[in-house]
Length: 570
Image 1: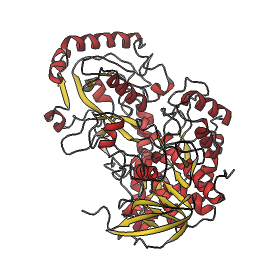
Image 2 (image 1 turned 45 degrees about the horizontal axis):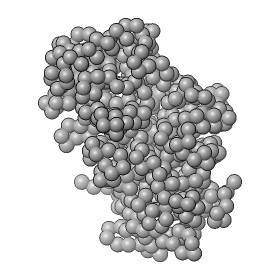
Image 3 (image 1 turned 135 degrees about the vertical axis):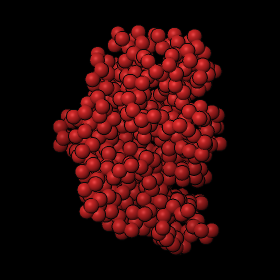
Image 4 (image 1 turned 90 degrees about the vertical axis):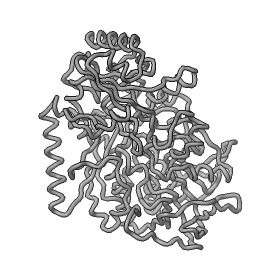
């Protein structure tokens, strides 16, 4: 079945543009910034759909010290953001990278505001992931796109990459909405108010011929609407095969569409924005972990590392290839995809154990840090084995689970049939069903219950951080992340998935690809997950992956527009 019903624009051999952008996720921001600067731009997309991993994401973006944050009263400053990034990155990435990010952040939001129909808001209270560090913010720096009408895309709506989860009713749910909708049985006034507002917007919009979406769908659609409005062509089902060089710089690319090749000349350069190597399982096992399995990544299916490999062919160096935006997920059923876990690990009445039946981490920590703890164990020769999220009936009756199981709904039958989920009336029976050592599991449960009753996790500090508490249950005190388990118990197997890899081509503060001697490959830029993470081995806040993709797209476009090889545009 075709990905969309629209014919693909024909790739024309001999085309010449100022800037060629490979990839249609945050690469669209690079194209918009370049067009605003007066450049002629072309976007090339390997798959038949536009939006990349951005369209499949939660759509939040982390861009500190912007006028948007100032206008909504966040109190953030460039100095505070700089202090935080210095502390959180801690030499795992060059200072030039994160300073370049800060330098171009506000300009990026200004550009998006003038080139697209999107409007943004501050997700007040969505804490930075490490708010306890110097410069960290408990109220956060994360922003989102307001619900967006996809119908403005017209026929091109069919070309937008779909979300990971589709709502059963037409209702745009932002990340800020989700937090309270998830707590509707615990904080009904706030939860029902959010549900009512979004249901009216979604259903009412449908009656008017509108299709409101939120999250990554809104952001990707908004970018695409800007691209269409600017008349920037997008060649779908067109793959990058090689880069063309001349006079010591990248001057274009050889593309392939439907078995035919087309050479495009790019006077000012090429921007590689084709994602990471999410779905190259051989490369992932080489650099990251032999335990990773095909299909566990939530990144776009087209992210197979082509741009990273081709960038290396012209001299680009790589960095941080062992890193990914790790994200724990419910193990997939046969032939299915993993189910995302976001708030579930933070909510009281639950904990996670390894294959030995023991806790090993603060379950409520940010998802990248969670994955890093898992891999640290593996590299130390003490692998975690199967991971199980354990919770009780009260938990199941109170919260949404895996985005699709609403409170009091039974877990999917297939989960039980395939051994992904188990339930039992007592701890020993649950341990036996899940294949866990009975004695260690029952002792873990006993100890956890004691810590929860005291309201303090003396083992792993769960609930000590403002980030932990963001997805906790405010009706549970003294610690919104801790409650003793009792009665019927459940165990659901989880696996280490990801939102995409974040190691790739080494780049500078303008997004220029660097060689191993740190000199730039002139005319070549890398942004998003094609580039090594500007924040090194750390995820500073919700939306940092999309944030840096948007920002370095702008930085690269401005540098290319300057048109002087080897000189920064600002």
